[in-house]
Length: 108
Length: 126
Image 1 (cartoon, rainbow over the protein chains, first blue to last red):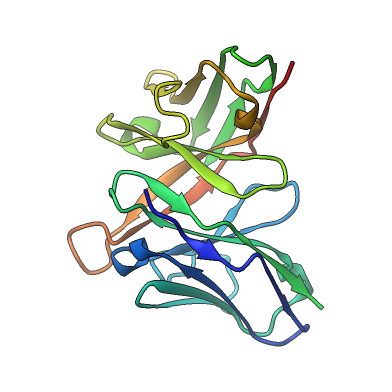
Image 2 (image 1 turned 30 degrees about the horizontal axis):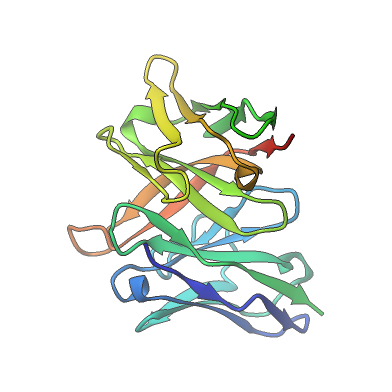
């Protein structure tokens, strides 16, 4: 298996831009996907295949990657963006899946 | 509209068994990669098991040998049989569809979960 590392907490002022990162060896081979989870709810896919947004996801959400690190950027963060964010990719065996530990985003 | 509805959670004693079900509508379970993902109280997401469209099964090391994933094509339903349950298996269990991302190539360049159920809580406690 492999691991994906995320900062546990990140904060951003309302309307500002924030970047959430995800680091791991598997990201040298596989693109990351990103999920938003609010309390008591199931996760929601916000970015897949590094930088693709599902329909219905605001364009202030974007993804990028470099080397072993993937990033989720929220440009002009809104109060409703306050949530936990998780990255995932295939693991190094290519048969399993790995999640990052999650980042709790606070919008100030 | 795709719906995934998990049932079967509850309170179970350590060492006990439980079977979770995930009834799908809007997608054909046997034509997709289907997975179980769990989340312990206050913790992050953990991938548990996968059954791919070809019927091959895969497990996280933490559940290998204790959990079995399966599907009933006639009922369009995914299952997770959980045996020899431990306190650390306490979690909300989600069923989710897993998709491969190919980008511009012919081999998967990533994966993502696009549809999730609402989850079912399993509590392992005496």
